Length: 189
Length: 242
View 1 (tube, rainbow over the protein chains, first blue to last red):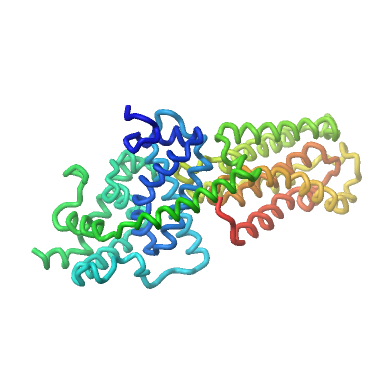
View 2 (view 1 turned 180 degrees about the vertical axis):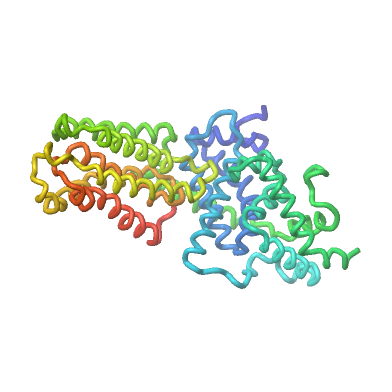
């Protein structure tokens, strides 16, 4: 065990239990732990800072409504990730329905020009474009497996499919990314 | 990051890491501001009936729905007379059982916890289509004219009354499901189908008017009106976050 439920050493699950019992400090600590992770995740998917923030806030709002479903022994991370991924998918669907397809990538999420060398930014942009070319189902897997470092079993739990299907999607996604970026990668070698 | 077997190899892994490193860190004051907004939104929601109901556990929310359904059924059972014994044919029973099963499925979909991956859309759309279809099919097994308390030619005239009653009965079901829905995709459409099924269930069980035309105009139309009216209109209008 890791001390008092609201200490920074407490596990996510201990914090969640304290939050369910009405502990505001635990709520804040959970937010501080997960908001930055979720912001990176949603930014990469949406490429819009304001929207990413809104989705992260909405994730915590939904977590608040769903907190009484949390059972001792469950893990908090897949919960939070699943809620966020559901919201991202919902957003894309709504965008599709309203035919507001974004043709130009939003550059708000791009790093500040004065801090990043031009070449690095261009390569980052290239990779972003390549990621955007992947089907959503494959992008989700790359995001969770590679960027969020989640094992395949957990990725499968979060996106609601089998581990085998996740492995196949990951394999295809990495193969496609390599293909898309092959000239750039070779250029470096 | 991940085990060697799982990782994208060579230059790609490097590029992905590079991309990750380029993501800007959020300043502490922005996070503070975001948390403040989340807290005030949660507090505001906790003060409302819908917020209170939605934050109950899924078991509790489903128990609430089942209890309300059971109470409504009991009231209906005692207040309105059922169709005559001779009219309680196998298709009549099958229609009621089908409506019940579909209603239960709709309730499970609408009250699905949001921490689970959302269901594929075809499942929700499929349920809504089957629900509307079931009410139409049921209309082709109407009350036999010999068992009816109303002459068959009056059926079309009575359709408006049945439709009104069906819509009235469906509204509380729709409202209850929407109050308990935490924001599932297509929740409004499924709740609308459930409302239509509830209306059809009561009408099928109690309506003494014979004729397919009556059931199509007065009963099946209830599900259609709910789905097309409430479901779609609600879906296309901007919604408050749940």
